[in-house]
Length: 588
Image (cartoon, rainbow, N blue to C red):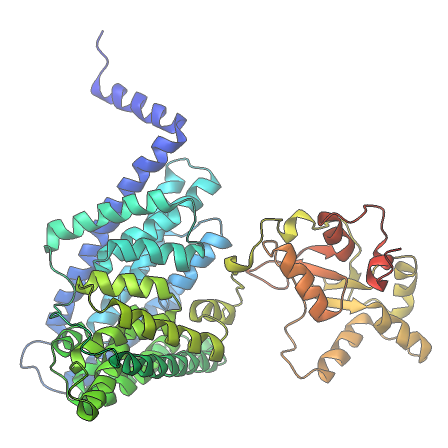
């Protein structure tokens, strides 16, 4: 009897499940095609909504009213139904990959598409690329979980969805893969390179099938007119680096202020961004939206010096306010706009001063795009490849590399924390810095889970017998299930000597917090994926030989402790060496 098509299909699926490599490759193509289709629909929907909200010849009052009402609508949706759809989505994607086992809800994907389409169509000064990355990662997560994949396999599909989304949203398949490895994974040698390339190519082909083979920007051929012109590009790197730092610090500072407002105002906070864009857009319409049309004109030489300089400043204010107030949208596109305007302004000044040896403003706008991108997002390699793919012009690559490097260096020196990591930290999530990992191992490999925890209400007198015979110099303190911090041996013995042994450990922690000038909620801690090098570094900074290991999602969730002696044993020190000998430096 000949097997039916349905039974043959089931047999093929079962065989595919048994072959992990084949299944991964197959799902990478499926994710790429599906993410490409969703991204194309996202682009078309946003464009058609914007055309209805801003019809040709419409009154100026629309520029004030539409973004205000649009932000009010999305604010209600974000506060009530889609709390994880705020912002760009890249910090949330990194959180899902590194902390949450690759888990992203389909509800978040739907919310992101709905809220971002409304925000961008109404004129918010934000971009579609970052949200597309979260949508792509979410689709990959849902497909992976429903295909019966293991936790690690689901996590490996997240970057596949990211590269597919960015390839379609930005029309840059190579830069999409590089950005996924450089920013999302934090490792250009990640093992997902092959599957990310496959999904990126599949998504890009879907984009070209529906929207045609057109670059995002049409750029005339530019070339270096004179070797001394490189000095002007170096100046552009300085300008772009300083502007990038100003933008990042403004956005983070404003966002922190919004976070300190009462939770009951969460639904109306996005209106501040909408109203700001509306007011600025009433006088300068080009500030609204992502601004790709104006970028294209500027790249082709249509730039008035004072106008582009003003637009660069206003875009920094508008984008920072829109993002900080909680609207849905990213900073990819706005960073290109800011860079193009700064580049055109710098090039305009240079061309006035040195007309014989400098190109027109369009060439500097092109380099400025990559410069701001490298300074704001801190992905210098991606920025070079991305500008090349967007423009399909290789001749300006050397000035671009010089300017990008300078901007990246300035940004790193003046703003130590990359913007996406800083945004995650403001949300209480400490993302790992994969660049600092070593091959030796991570904190989890030497973490102890069997140890003494001192209750916060315990008195010093009651704690004394518990610590007397211990070799440690500090112990974790918890109030119920909530970890409060570490208490040192000296902090427990001093009250006894002063006749204040009736004090509770909680009182001692409170007194210590009052005497500290830093953030009282911060304390020396580790995360499971910290390298042993980082463990030793943090122990040296804190002066403690015992440090708590806490969750990245919640600093008050204690997972274990790491002891200096255990770390040194991992490095090859004698196993019978007591911790006291290590801390005292007596290795005889």
